[in-house]
Image (cartoon, rainbow, N blue to C red; front, side, top):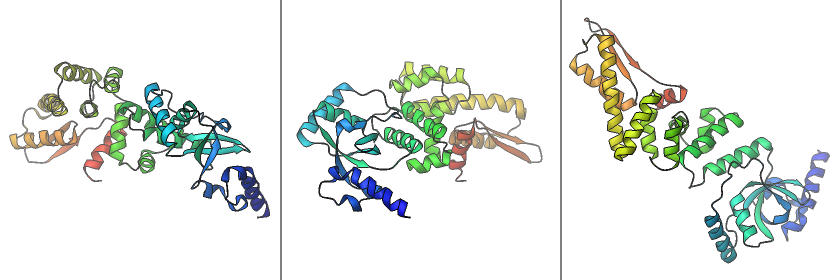
Length: 296
C-alpha cells in the first residue's frame, strides 16, 4: 500500500511545473485525464500507432491560422512516458497545426494507456474524423478487430454502433479492388456499394458496377438494377430446383423476401404443401446482417 502511495507522489512531482496552482501531491493520473494542462510541444513525441498518414496541407494551414487567433480549443490527449516526456494518443492534426502556428506549448489531457490501448484509442479517434471515406472507415474497423482482438459485437459496443452497421462497412472490404477504388474516389456512394455487397459473384459485381458508373445511376436505381439481376438469377435457380412448379403467389413472396434480405431466397414445396425456405448468406457478417433484419 505504501509503495502505491509513493508511486502516486512521484508522478505528482513529475508534473508539478505543468499544473500551475494545482497541488501536485494530491493529483492522480485519473484526475489528470479530466484536467487539461499546458505541455511544451518539444516534450511530446508522435504516436507510433497513428493509423493516419495523410494530412491535407491546406486544411492544416487553415487550422493553424485559426489556432493563431483562437488558440487550441480541444486539448490533445497524451500519456506520460517519464519526467518531461509524453507520447501523443490523439490529436496529431492539432499538434501539427500548433507547431505550424509557432506555439511552444499545447493544452493536453494526460491519461494512462498501454500499447494496446494506444492503438485502440488512435484507431477510434481516426474513425471519428468526418473526412474519412467508407473504405478507410472499414479498414480501421478491421484493424480494431485484428490488432485489438475484438469480436464484431465488441467492436460495435466500442463505437456505439449496431452490429449490422459495422457489418455493412466490413463488407466493403470484400468487394473487388476496382469497386473499392470507385468508392474511395467518390465515383459511387456508400449506398451503391451496399447494393453490390449482396451480390455473391465478383464478376457480376464488377459488371453491375460498370453499369452503375456508366449510366450514373442513383442509389435507388442501383438497388432496382441489383434486384432485377437477383430476381432473374433466382428464377433460373428456381426452374432448376423446383422444376417450374412453384405457385405464382409463392414466387411473389420469394421475390419480396429476396429484396428484403438482399440475398438469394429459395422456396421448395411438394404437391402436399410441405417444403423448405432457404435464405443464402455469404459470410458471418452477412449472416449477422440478416439476423438483425429478423430481430434475432
